[in-house]
Amino acid sequence: MVHATSAGVRTDGRRWLALGAIVASGLVLGLDSTILVTALPTLSIRLGATTDQLQWISTAYLLGLSGLLIPAGVLGDRLGRRRTLLGALLTFGLSSAAASQMTTAGGLIAMRALMGIGGAFIFPNSVAVLPTIFSETERPRAVAIGGAGMFLGLPLGPLVAGWLLTHYEWGSVFLINVLFVMLALVGVRLFFPESGDPDAPRLDLAGAALAILGVTSLVYGVIEQPTSGWNDRTVLGSLVTGAVLLAGFTIRELRTRSPLVDLRLFSNPRFSWSILVSVLMSFALMGVLFVFAPFLQVVQGNDAQATGLRLLPLIGGIVLGALASDRLVARLGARATLALGLLICGAGMALMSLVGAYGGYGLLLLALPIIGVGDAFAIFTALNVILDALPETQTGAGTALARTIQHIGSSFGVAIMGSLLNSAYRNELAGRMSPLPHNLQDVAEGSVVGATVVAYHLPAPLGPTLLFAARDAYTIGMSDVLRVSAGVMVVAALLVGVFMSERVQAAATAPASVGGEPSVPTRIRR
Image (cartoon, rainbow, N blue to C red; front, side, top):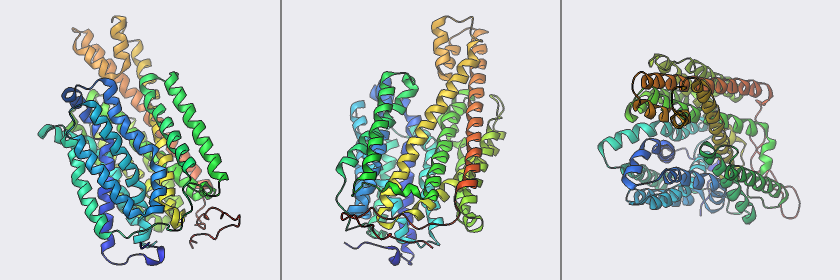
């Protein structure tokens, strides 16, 4: 097997075709993260799925994706990233095709879990290939273009799903994956070099088990929280179990001679601060989609396809920021670009917090691209700094570690902001429902969707009054979430500006050898 190194970086035009395969891989993962938001009601009708089964259709994918990211990156480093990526894409494509033909909710849940497993192997290994096919000069632009695929898929998901469900059967939301997977398979097969570490030490199976179980348990607790609450035994048990297992994973990785992933990477402050920024920016993008999609659909009355169209300015901002981020880093440096991206995103969220329930789309048309530009500046710069800090033999493992932390952090962020939104919504609505029976009050206070359903079954003036109050309460809660998020962005920008070093440090060394002698750094960056 031929393994590419930084000394053998490609200089021919085929590297840009390889980048196209990375974009296709990322796009399918981004689409699949949000496309079911629109499709779940249809799946409920066509498959007779219960509420719990609908939740598991989403949960199975997230658990498979989250829990296996670190082992997937490590295996790619050891077995070869090209080979691993081909297998992952094939798994994802076949399970997507099978999902489109399922006739029961249980079968679809199983296929979604298999899609999550394939997705866990796709992300770290596609990103880890970038340093082997692009020079350090070209890599910032390649990272921005490659990463844009996944982040564009997030807001595109509801738009694509709305269009597909309008014109085709429900299975089309899974068959669309097959098209992108086929493009990615051809690109990887023809244009990717093989890369990895043929001399890697033995695999830390105990560490892998702790990572899989710990991350899966933690993410499951976060997923269950919105339905069951923070005080639920299952939620608390999952969170505590996950935290204990991950603490055990950390202790083991720091003590063993052959760790699954070298946690001493965090001693590089540029690596640590960049991971923090990527967590915050993922939270910002997912947080906007989390609070904004119901606002457009339930509060302002848009259908799924119209909601997707109204997210296009956000997509435009991401594209613009991705194209300009490498030039900005060349002029200002990574630290200033990260801080600037955070501040721009915070400004967009603060502007968006001023929108009213019946305020129209004008203010949103201005705020959404600002959020997109800021998000792109920060997250693509952070990803490039992370790759810059990783030894060549650990790019898959290090990228997977960063993505896992990013995923856990953004999941907690959405859960916490969801609690803030619900609290503000209930407080605003509580004093405006006194004429209603208690059972209807409980439904209305549960969500703005519930309040809308109740309002449409009440006579005037109770129905219109409740509908107005619920929409107003949700908008106030959304504004609270956006203001808190903007504040977090500003604080993070200040911390990055003050504490993150601009000087590029040497890449972290590989773990100490079995004999106890310190190993030579894998790569030195100047």
